[in-house]
Image (cartoon, rainbow, N blue to C red; front, top):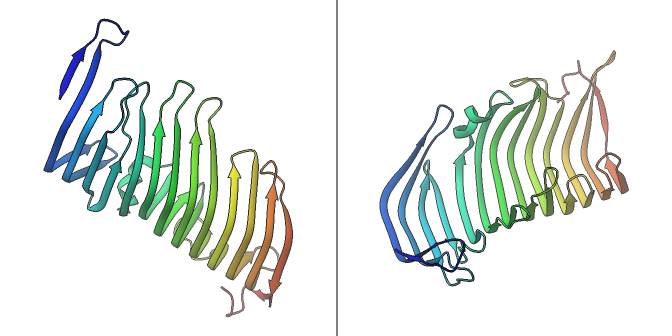
Length: 276
């Protein structure tokens, strides 16, 4: 590691890292709400400089975060004129329960596993933070409680692009890709045995969305839908398959669909043994 002093710039220090390596070590984070340990099998930073316009640096990491395999390869770690990181990220089977105390009581329970595999970029220019991700996000055996509603999901997979642009009021999130799921259950209250909604499977394609501005879904298909309807005569609506084409919205408040196909719908009184 070399530190150079310059009298001609407002920032007097330039940090140069020709080569730095770490092997077989552990970093632990312990707070009242979160306990994480990062096991470093190997990590290497090469050719890094905070000098403006410096290029050619690389960072490689292989290890585990709370026993979940983690690999990172940054091919553009840049420190000047602003922080700019880009590369690949792979994380498999991270235990979401490790974050449960941090999110409570707003989100409770919060369990399941998460994994990502894709390419990312993160930068901090003067106008605000920017983040881009292209790849997959997988959630498994998820159990989440929010605002009195329990959400269970056996499997949820996102494949596509997502970006965040900061600055202004809250920033902007944009997505483009597909979302597939299995074993979705919605219910009032965590642990409820009377779900409002069940879906054996659902698949979407052609999703394009920008928060607060527009939403478009080319196709949405569900299989094994069961919906509970409460009232004086409680009913369960069972639909083996629903296909919705070209869903659009310009403000996230009103929605339009180009086509809807519903097959073999059954309406069953809830006292009937055939319900959900």
